[in-house]
Length: 295
View (cartoon, rainbow, N blue to C red):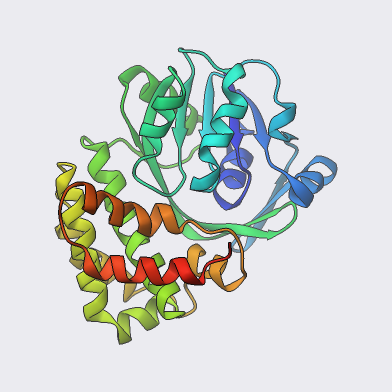
């Protein structure tokens, strides 16, 4: 099969470097200095004590050509729609699309934009761009989670099996996606609002964190998803992360970069309003962070 990885950051870069070792043809799409470095020197993965490098067919999305059987989107949530439209002429109803971007409505967006087979999914990995052309992955954390169309799931599973990448196919994929989202949404919002890392929030704003997690769980309930058990699980996770761990949204705010506020905070406020429930703490922080963000 021919596989496209759209976005070669921490997630997409690691996936592309892993999948290029399989029998499938892999094309990666990126931009800027990172793309230029991959084109000239390949893509390097720094994984704890080991390093490895692959040659990868990397281009800008505007240079995409041919047909893709599978497209894996690893872009920021705010770039998902544009990325899907850019590759639309290279897929059809038999193609398989999946987004590992943050958020719980990515699959819905892809279905609106395409008649391809869309899987729901999320991914657990600690990785980032260390410098142009280099992806740093920390620890042993890696699990791709996906579900939906049975045939599409089987095809994607076979690719991950060949690449020796861990994955799960839960019986309730929507609950699984929300399970990851509740932690990211809460702690991205809290770390950014308090300008603190995750452990600082856990130790100094525990009650606020618990309140916010409950508000997110209440919104999930309106979607038919029960994740109230994840309130305690999320708090336990926050209490165990390394002291220097923060969130990408917090770092984006600090570095004055484009952020995922609408996906990680605004979505909860808007869905709560649409379903006539109250989320006062999330609303308070969301409105304040709107004022602080770059225009």
